[in-house]
Image 1 (tube, helix red, strand yellow):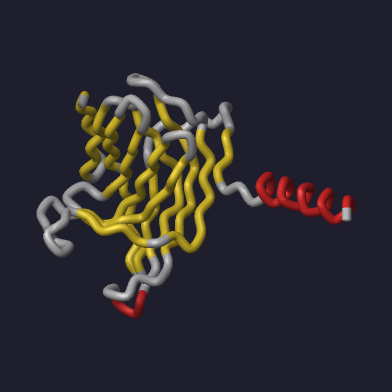
Image 2 (cartoon, rainbow, N blue to C red):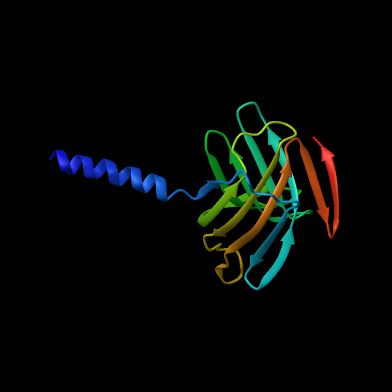
Length: 166
């Protein structure tokens, strides 16, 4: 009986350690967001980033300027990644955004604790579950590098980048 309990404990620790999808690499260096997005046969880059820093949480959104698909990272004691669509009006049953479930994700960040002025850098790969209202129940796929300065909004239109303080 004692061996069985020990085995269960060791197996649980192994699962928690090696199934982690968020990695920390303090040596990572990213100069700008270049996030390739794919919906069905369409491919495009997104790079606009905004944040909402509270006392106990940080939400960073990387989106297509003007509306469309994006990713969101909610950072508290843990990191919660999300995929969503947004619009600047109540397009989704009166709401500005709708979230979709993740089928897979991989995320490497430079750190997990941020204050105003810090730079978040990372590499991401997200894949949504099939989305019913999209053509052929397509999946949203994001892969690339992200960079965001906490306390700012970085607007990207074409090749022009503009930095705004929150």
